[in-house]
Image (tube, rainbow, N blue to C red; front, side, top):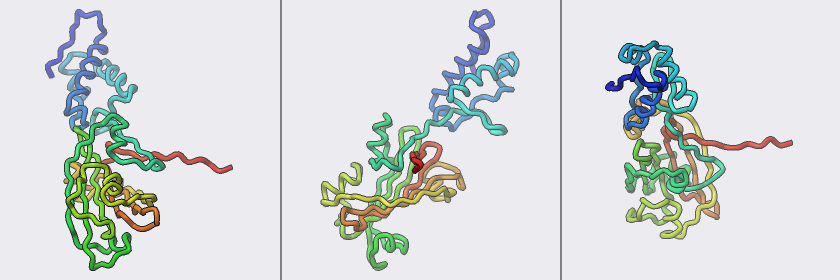
Length: 245
């Protein structure tokens, strides 16, 4: 901590500390929420001021929603969450661009795999079939937001040579003449197992959001069975419900 207060400045001490904290929270480690801000006691001792002065500066940033305090844990930058709507079907890439966020693909992998019971049932295919499995880890430059796993019905004609870096449903329509129409979805909170925790860089047993969906074409035939695991520090789902009168 190289910051020093200017005792001769007309700027109040708490305001000087506030400006110091504002500069601190935009640094990478603090901005990502991985690093906690200095503790009040430590700052008070190093700067030679009362804890009330430190607290006055911190409270200003808390009230602005820039930082948050957790008792017994510490103070850190509030992570901006990506809010997406359940009633608005749009690709992840487009949704992020609409919010001014550059999408980073940390993993894109396509492989032909043996079908699992859950997948066979969802896609209404025999358990002896092999299907194409697409895995993606996506997020921003700051963090990984989600891990996605998709299984495609053999009828689609996936070859494995497609460019899965572009939005999926655009690809299916352009290269395979598949127009998706309906998405049947389920959402639930789960604890991250060791695999998901490692993929999303989070602790094991941390609460995450799991979305399961079955995507159908215009003839109500299964196209894709998809599971997405969301890092809830960065992602939320919103929906508006109107009461019938």
